[in-house]
Image (cartoon, rainbow, N blue to C red; front, side, top):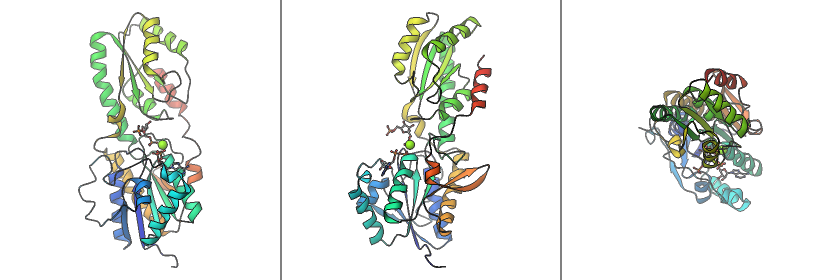
Length: 328
Ligand SMILES: Nc1ncnc2c1ncn2[C@@H]1O[C@H](COP(=O)(O)OP(=O)(O)O)[C@@H](O)[C@H]1O
Ligand SMILES: O=P(O)(O)OC[C@H]1O[C@](O)(COP(=O)(O)O)[C@@H](O)[C@@H]1O
Ligand SMILES: [Mg+2]
């Protein structure tokens, strides 16, 4: 076959997520399987600009499947947003005879890949790795399931103390512009209210709802707030507002922060990462470019970057209903 891919580079970019290591491992081993040379790029696009490369063989990636973070490290690269930076990146790829690139990251990473791929006609395939699950065309992104489990475990602990003290806890979770973590972990942890960017509840309605649940006999409450939510953006201001207008509870705030991004990946994320890593190499061998490899209805799919980037997945209205009914 003409244009046979002989050398693939792989990088991780944007916010790290549990399972990225498993995805790198799968890419490296799929390359070994198909007798394709594999190079790891350190620190995402920044390492591409600096030529910070390391050859990856099947044994280089041993003992990684269970490890959180990314051993190739990740970065948010300002220089890659410039044409000059991207020119440098292309020179390094050319000088190292690299034919194609696998980028593991989120929406920003795919945007960068789309821009770069168009500018230099360079084949790039994306693997969705972000805890936010804010990519279209794939049911799940790598790291999301692990993050959900971390959040639920943390909220279970908060529930113990909330209940012992008759307190209302506002728990802030990640998800820059997406409510997936808040909604699913909120249901899983039995939250009374879930505030997400996709749906603006309004402070007054939140207060009314809390008053109703207090009246119905609840003695403590957990509200899960996505960091990008309209009324929860400043969670401490929201806590003051509730404290001032609802005297039945003592209000406390917990910001879960970056613990949500760490830890050993769940089995689901390990399997997903393994499938998508292999899918990315398959896609390149089959001459695909500018696509993300995703999973839809249990099957591997190739989704053009343009579609993957068409806003985050719509929020599942059925889940909103489940949250409403189970918290009555
Ligand atoms: N429009 C763009 N042009 C070029 N590079 C971009 C663009 N958008 C994002 N990138 C690159 O992708 C990197 C990762 O994006 P970011 O939004 O930080 O994370 P994520 O991929 O997890 O969403 C950015 O730091 C930048 O280097
Ligand atoms: O660690 P940083 O750079 O402060 O970024 C925090 C952001 O990264 C995330 O954890 C993941 O987002 P991305 O996958 O888009 O990088 C968001 O949920 C959060 O808002
Ligand atoms: Mg993102």
